[in-house]
Amino acid sequence: MATKKTKKVKATIIETTANKALGFATMANEFALAKAEKAAMTSFDLTGKCVDFSGKVIKKGLKISASQQDMVFGVLGSLKKKVVKK
Picture 1: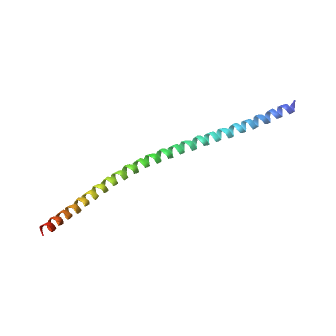
Picture 2: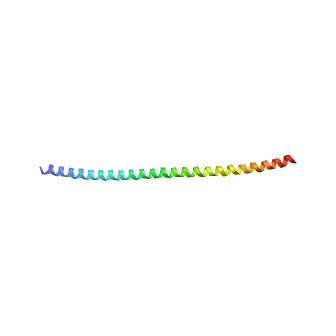
Picture 3: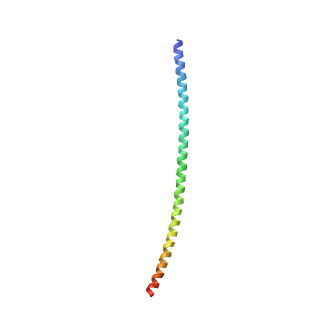
């Protein structure tokens, strides 16, 4: 009879230890998942901000390029008028 109790107690200790280990693993998994989700969301937010910023920079660059092209065509137009007069 004593042997049966000892086996049952050992099984209970093993089960208790396994349950605690499973609980710790579950907590660690939930923590890692929460941190990974937070990192992913932060990454998406920063990516959105970068896309907005680069869009603004590209628009300003295109405006500058357009004004420079207008200036070049203006100079070419005035040169054309001078050449045609002569």
